[in-house]
Image (cartoon, rainbow, N blue to C red; front, side, top):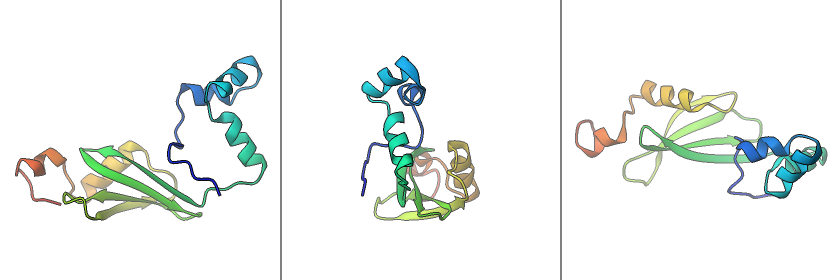
Length: 122
């Protein structure tokens, strides 16, 4: 089992460089790029079985969840912080823009509007 709460599916510049061959790729791996580790995992047959990511969109805490080979499910945290509302799913990992559209389609606006009483709580 591999559990890494800091490993994201998106790459920064160091991760991208670490996927290349040669001196630059080796240096990027040494400095913390994940390209070498990803190659080792792929070569050994590793497949993610549970992926949970989170970020903020429209001021709302959003979670992306994929279990095994299922679709990516998107959830938005309620204002009380106690539970989440499902807002959509996609076959591939949704982009930030797609999540923003899902929130809009689910009539979930900006959090500041709810905080200032301009729209009902979620």
